[in-house]
Image (cartoon, rainbow, N blue to C red; front, side, top):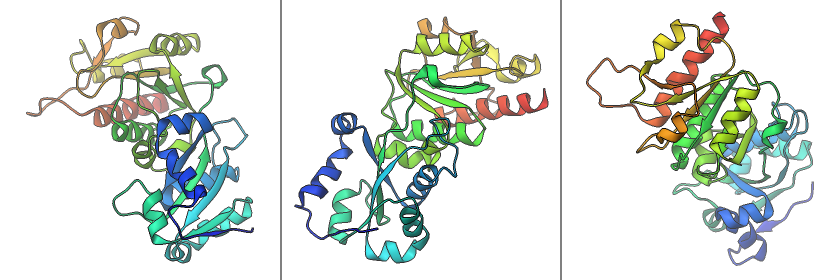
Length: 281
C-alpha cells in the first residue's frame, strides 16, 4: 500500500489531521484520532472484522495511520495489519508526531478513524447497559467504557449532556474498548431510560445517597434479568428528576472510612455485580 512521508508540521495534510483534536472538526468530518499502539491495534482489528463490531457486522473504518520510523519498526504487526485491510501507513518525523499527538510522551502511532456510534434504535438485545448522564470527565468516561466492555455489557449510552466519547483522553482511557461494543451518543437521558425499559430492562440509578443497597438489590434478584445502570456527574451525582425516572437509587456499600467512591470505581462494582448475578441466574 502506497504511503507518504511527512516531515513538516506546516503540511496541510498534517494540519487537517491535527484539527481533529477539536470537537467541532470531529463532528463535521465524523472522524477522530486513536492514539497509541493499543488503540490503533483494536481499531484495525475491528476494521478487519476480527473484533466485535458496533455496526452489527459492518466494521468501522480506519482511514489512515501515521507512525514514526521507530514505531513502525517496533510495531510491525500494526503495519502488517493496516496493509492487510488496505489502510495506508504514513511515515512521519518525530516533530510531526509531536504535533499530532495529544499526550506529553507520544508512543509514535496514531490512526484517523471514522465515528463508530450507532443510533439508539439500532441496538440489539440489551442484557446490560451503562448510561452516562452528565459525565464530564473524559478519563472517567473512557474508564467506564472500558469497564463496561470487560464486564460484558451490550452497550454504553453517552447522553446529550455528557462528554464527547471521541475526546482524545476518553479514547485513550477506553484502551481500545471504544471499538468493541456499541456506543450511542447524544440522546436525552429520559429517552435512553425509556428505550431500555422498552427492551425489558430494569433501570437503576447509581447514587451514593441511594436508599437501596447494591448487595440487597442483587440478593433480591433485581439484577438477574436485563439491567441498565445510570451513572451521574463526578461531583454532584444524579439530579432527583433523573433518579425518579429509574427504578430507584442504589448505593455501593462502604465498609471502611472512605467518604465515597469515584465514578469509575462505583461503575465497576455495579457492572461486575450485575454480570455475576446474570451469569448465576
